[in-house]
Image 1 (cartoon, rainbow, N blue to C red):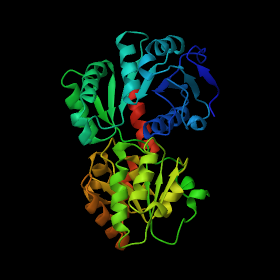
Image 2: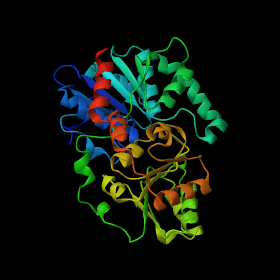
Image 3: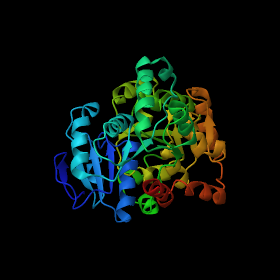
Length: 380
């Protein structure tokens, strides 16, 4: 646990905070997890670290690394946290702020524009700015992108988690904006091998049949309906089991769809699992069915675990992670039949992964590699 739970009015470290990692909450999403991983790296470099959240909510409270200070602004909404965030800046005087998740990053940029406290601001863009088909028809999303195109200019650096996201940021900001860099998320941690073989209920084989695993929040962008329909199609020829790890508002709807498709007894919605690696490791196939991804870090974990992978070729990360199809099968977004065929082909004939090339490829997603890149931005 962290050294203590504090509020936005708390006294600062002895001396200024070196790095503040700012995000909306402590939910179990990928962006929040990466922020806490970066906190671990900075602490290992003997830096004073604050984890600053707009509201202390979510399942990652016990994942705050020892030595970091948790600061909650206790705001009702992220976009209404500006004044409390500015008060934190004045009291803690962080030298560097790294923000993540768009609404928190917008607040951090607005505070920077208002000159609340002089500091270096690094904005991490974890998700695709556009990508899902619904985005193109959503005027609220486009209005939000216009706002981001303005406020992001007040950051000192913008960090993209994939080449595709990097290109989107360059188009969004245009000329004259802050430097934009690419740093893949630190997905493979020093304790990866230990966690991979950690005894847990997730490591128990759930059935005698081939097991397919998917992981991620139960949200429309993950397109689990396509996965369920593809799995129902697969079940006509292979008696497989599907395990979906993650929680979200779409759970009831997805469970109802599984019932309609007649697969309810062959699909397990396992909920939030703090360490999904043992289950991913014993899976016969790992599947990602997203409409869009910033990177798709769970694909990196599956590859590092030695599990065959099938993914949609969505914007932007999966194609990069899977080496354009070299390390796993890629299928068109939303194509039920192609996804079912790819799962069947993988179960029938799993590809042996090119170990030497894959090991070199995965290095760029490691804890030390990404940490050093972030230190470069902090010190530049």
